[in-house]
Amino acid sequence: MRSINYQCNSTPRTIGVPMIGGLRLVPKIKITEAARKSSRLPICPKTTISCSIAQPKTVQTVQDIIVKQLSIDESTVTPQTKFADLGADSLDTVEIMMALEEKFDVSIGEGGAENISTVQDAADLIEKVKAAAA
Image 1 (cartoon, one colour):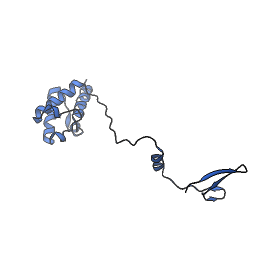
Image 2 (image 1 turned 180 degrees about the horizontal axis):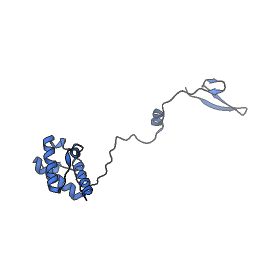
Image 3 (image 1 turned 45 degrees about the vertical axis):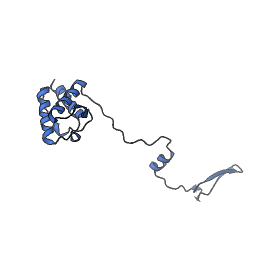
Image 4 (image 1 turned 90 degrees about the vertical axis):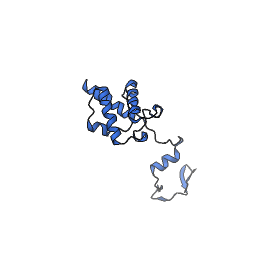
């Protein structure tokens, strides 16, 4: 129900809105619904923001090792590529991690490898381990 405000004899009045004891009753509106309806900005899809700590050279080396270990075309491997999308199973991932440890002369450990899902994750982990060892 809409309300119409008008002024008569310098006393504001409201038409169409029930009043009790001089207080206007206002329908309960969910904030999210009200915000959505009043927003003039377009609704944006979910956006992911990532922050890379790995040097480009490290990322490239990780990509090269993955290409070699999985025997795949290098154009299919980008920093955002997930190991699962490359067809890598858990054994492949372990072998990739071992090759990375050997190449970068670091020890990643079992716990570190569990949190890796993308090429960028692997490169970032290498940089973290190298920085911690320094």
